[in-house]
Image (spheres, rainbow, N blue to C red):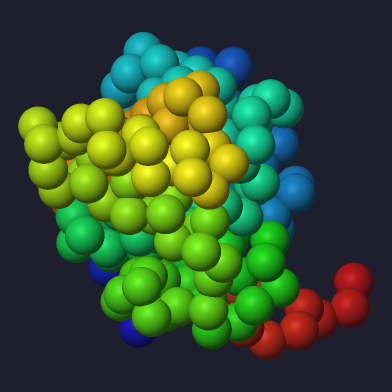
Length: 197
């Protein structure tokens, strides 16, 4: 079982020993999810970097403006994390995507090949752009922005798509560097009905 493997190859601090702001945030997540995602504990190895990471994460994923739904943001994360071969982010954000979209197969389909996934042409254009940011950002040109505009995205939306892809490029690399283990709970989330509380 994966639970016998360490969360990270780096030391993982005890929750009780963390600075108050980190501990408070982690306990809030635990209360909501029912468990502590390993990313919170693994990155807490360096509290100052944890704060910066979470601030940018929240600015991109929790903001109320822009035309991307929560599910679409997770689609970007899953597709680009798969391209970066990040097990943690594909598993964790695949779970979140399944929950948001209420589609138990979608995350796997997007992770393997978003062009074959049952998504809208608009979402396909969004993921095409995100994948180019991930794999060939040096080649982005006006035609890429025009392709997004043809599907109703404006330049601020393009920034959001690109920023999420870029931020998770960092996240993916840190997860791979630290050998971050996905929580077992993520594997079944959104695939099977939740047990009543």
